[in-house]
Amino acid sequence: RSGRKHAEEVEEGELNTPHFLLLHSLVADIPVIPDLEEVQEEDLAMQVAAPPSVQVNRVLTYHDLDKDLMKYAAFQTLDGEVDLKLLTKVLAPEHELREDDVSWDWDHLFTEISSELVTEWDLGQSEREDHFSLP
Image (cartoon, rainbow, N blue to C red; front, side):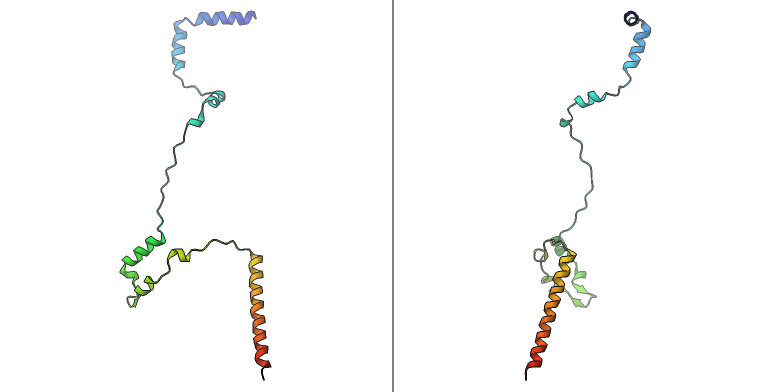
């Protein structure tokens, strides 16, 4: 304990020297890395990160493409000879062509197709038998 008391007395005596005051002013300007406990005490919930800047390319819809198709005369004829105006007028709209996504399973598809083929084969066989059985 006497060593600790002597160190405290020396420190108090050194605090008043011009050398210590100069050193203290120089050290005060050095940035300090905060401890983990200090960082955890800060309320990070109130801080919001800036959103990333991403350039998004606009994708044209079918409706926009249909409008553009009608504007260009190059798409109204094929090879300068075939008139496509009638075809472009009767093209099906997007909502009629849109289908729901259905997942395909190999076993299910194989079973479905093979049963359809067997059914068609059986119908073909019965038609041939009916044709040959007629007098």
